[in-house]
Image 1 (cartoon, helix red, strand yellow):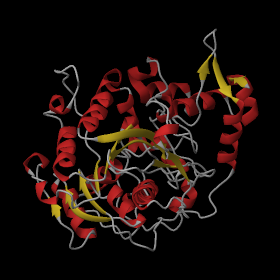
Image 2 (cartoon, helix red, strand yellow):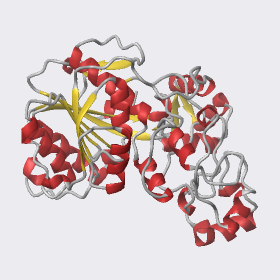
Image 3 (cartoon, helix red, strand yellow):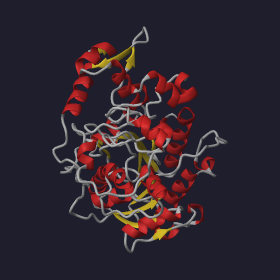
Image 4 (tube, helix red, strand yellow):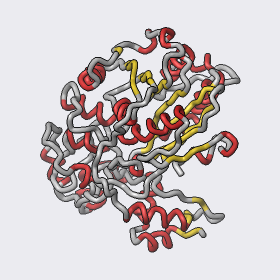
Length: 421
């Protein structure tokens, strides 16, 4: 049964504006009626109600499996180690990291003692010595512009992009599984041509490919953050695709920041501090008096669109908004729920589910950037557990329910994998 946005608002006991905001964030999906009205599925409304009303009994925890698997990983564009730590906590073992940024490479060395961390331009690294010696190649490759010179959109057409370096590593090492990670926007980048190119490249290299958007807030991460996960399985392996299944609870910011250690952090200029003191918990610039809205927003006040990240104060009883590379910029403020200040470095790390012991190198600004760019550790943990299940053939995962897709029951790539089910 489909409901209008006003009927949905009554069912959830929230404002119509909130429903629109949730739809924009991907928390709830809408279809359009013949009259172009938003319509919502009642069953999904009930599921969302359950998710919103049920809080995690675990509270904040960095998930970790006590057992190690025999499976190895090469990771490119490793950043500050969010994916790496999640994979390690799941039971995987890294044999090589590559990261161009010196500060990120230092962070990796600080925390993965004795690990092989190459601080090199990936284009200069030859991976042939690891051929048939690694189970998984993983990369959170930057999404650069593509040129589409060839009609097949194949391997050679991606030269000059960093995705090509990921594909080259896969070609040179021949892993059982390749995993790519990126922002949700990759689905629609250049009308889907970029993702189509990537899928075709992996097909050309001898891999079956499926992809899915995972929503972190339903996978033990106290943050509304979506990531596109691409999994490629070598054609000679008869194993299913496995993706994490969303939980029916969320972890709130209150749980995440409980007893958080004190640490360095940015400060607001006095003018901004005065404005944000007037913003209520969970509010943003539209909660200010109109004269202050106009003063703070300037010309942006008259532009269309919500600009909901501006003068934004977080809410204690919800997951955080997506963390950015700086919590104090005008477009992306992440103000503490009750204190008028940006989130600190350690609070940022908690929200990304890094343990308090994780040592970030560099300046305060560099630490924020590393954390803001990272994949949440617990999200990576759930992905890592799925990869282990795929490689081992044991699908009864204790710590995580999963979605198992065999080739015969997976629809053609498209709607199923546009949003996590």
